[in-house]
Image (cartoon, rainbow over the protein chains, first blue to last red):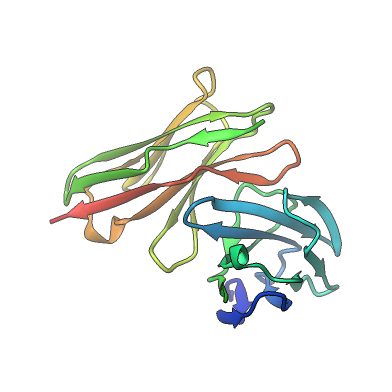
Length: 113
Length: 109
């Protein structure tokens, strides 16, 4: 089975721009969670989608949004980028919602200049 | 709220045994998970403890004491490839995983 894939792997943007990141879960997994990882804050939960519905959301501003498609692929969008949004964005899939066993993708490394 | 505490760094010698601790504070508890992340890589699931006691998977063991809100990951016969960051995680009140800041393990020859 193919693992979780994320595109793009690397991205450079400037302040004020917006960005869309994509995640394809493991086949058969319907839950996709997104995390932001930075050296200072560690792994922080952004949101989780299951069957095209957002189940829960972390403590991030409204500039961070996401969606899930009928094939379970998910996208997250960050609008009006700030320097502090530079981070590794990881998505993880699991069989069931809020699964303790999550399978992570390689991440998208975003640099905001 | 929920929080997890882990030592930031641990150094050990190849072939040795190392224990990495995790204490947690959470309003509802469903279990403790452990993940490994190599530099530049993605976190990978190692183990999950829902009940008290020791779970063993090869060279890796994970222990949980719910009464002490404490768990640890034990690595035996350390290898250089075990150098990585190790995160413990609990499920938050909304169902999402909350991760500790991680312990960076350095294995020396």
